[in-house]
Image 1 (cartoon, rainbow, N blue to C red):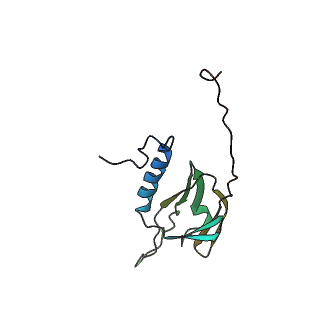
Image 2 (image 1 turned 135 degrees about the horizontal axis):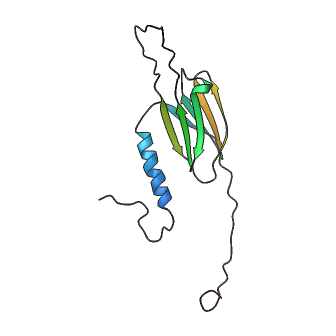
Image 3 (image 1 turned 90 degrees about the horizontal axis):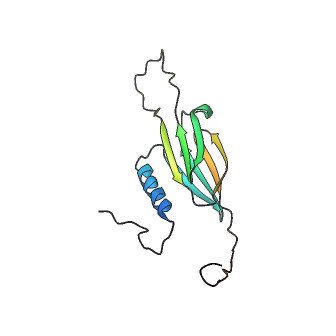
Length: 139
């Protein structure tokens, strides 16, 4: 029996966070392709993936349900080529990063075999809302 992270009745509506943590844990098991995550400032991040051998047409980046998903699939160009040794990885990959609420992808670019993705975390504005107390069940 597994213990749930948000099992307390005081955590209302956090089941989606638990599901995102499970997905992130499964995704982290595969180390390909290697990547860095860099803090560029108080509200900016950069993810850099080593994608040597992949071109622009081989890569796809999507934002799906609070996840940043990077997929790579190389077209087979080995026809007519004879490899005596093939040590450069040419396998497809999918790398997913769980994004916090409000994080936005600013841009992405490919440079010398490195895929860079810049993310921005807008500063949340403080909001206080007074809830009026009524009589007799909401009238």
